[in-house]
Image (cartoon, rainbow, N blue to C red):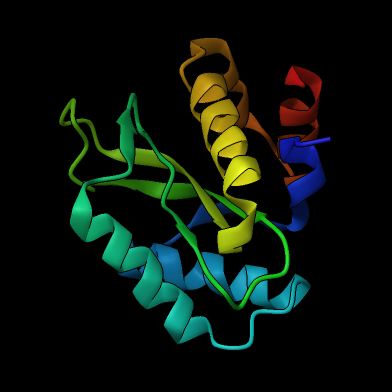
Length: 151
């Protein structure tokens, strides 16, 4: 099954992340992915994500962003999530600063899975009650449980 709960480990949920800019957010999230999944070259993954960001912002509005990439160094699609301690300006289409970031990375051969996860995450994040619950979650496990209940 292609579900967020199957791709997001509670160890990859960073709550109240302190970061000065998008690069710091992404580095922390990639570091979390690297501690759970095999990510051999974290700097390369960061460059791939930033290259995708250069094409167009992955902010979806309402305080949310879903940076993503397809990378040959990954065997399957994986995710990390961050709730920022202080919202950041990340070039959102509605001009709102970002508080919730979901990072998605997967192999090029997994494009269908990648798109399903991307779509599902965006759809969930457009629900005001879900965003509020994620912003109020007290633990990474509670954050993940909220997402799993949506599925």
